[in-house]
Image 1 (cartoon, rainbow, N blue to C red):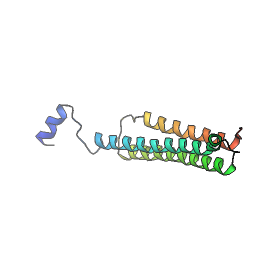
Image 2: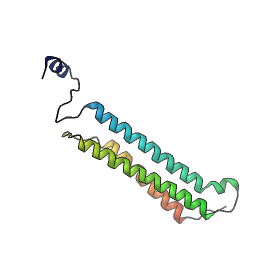
Image 3: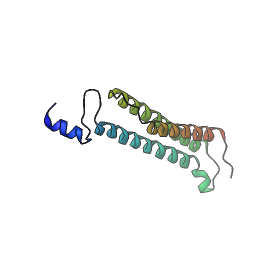
Image 4: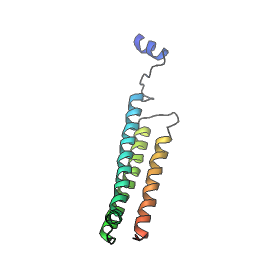
Length: 129
């Protein structure tokens, strides 16, 4: 290790090592997780709007709209699960031996659970005018 790395380490800077990934790599993984979760939430909301758009138009409910909306919410839930898996693999694959941040995983699983609940609701409840 050279003198510059020692001086940076003594000042508390993040110096990557073979056993500890850089903070930039972990922050990049978290930013990617949040981007995937934003996409999942958007698909979830859009699917619900598509499924309930007939109510806004004061028309008779259509099965096609409800099915399409349920499919979109299901895809949103799938995105949330894939985001958590990707994040988990990236954090574990980085060789990190310290405790892992659980907030990102919990947020992703919460979005996936919400998508599952909304999808089940859309598939089981009939719309009433």
